[in-house]
Length: 132
View (cartoon, rainbow, N blue to C red):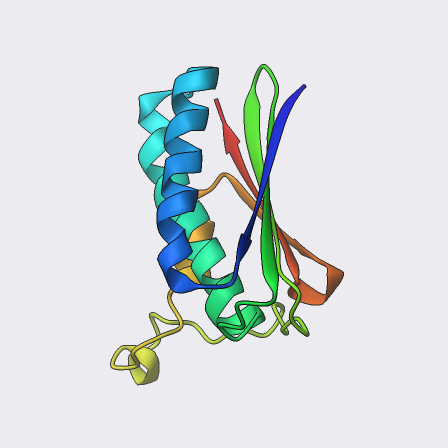
């Protein structure tokens, strides 16, 4: 299994670093273009959530990103230093009462673009899996 890791301070402008990380991984590991877009959107959304909601935009806190690749799948593990969240009781962003709300769609998007989404460590750790 191939793995690479990166750690960034929790500043929203560091999303550019994550985008470059994903681009470099695509080139280095020949990640299929068919799943590249789903990976880019899902991982940047997850890291954004970790920065904004997990670490509350506290630049002294880190977001860690790991990529694990084998023959048939690529996994991204995103960890923040926040208090976690109740991932088992999320509001449905497609419910009529939630359609006008500004937020609440990130996890919904990740679940639809990833083949598998797992939360661990009270929601401080997210594992996004994409099948190749």
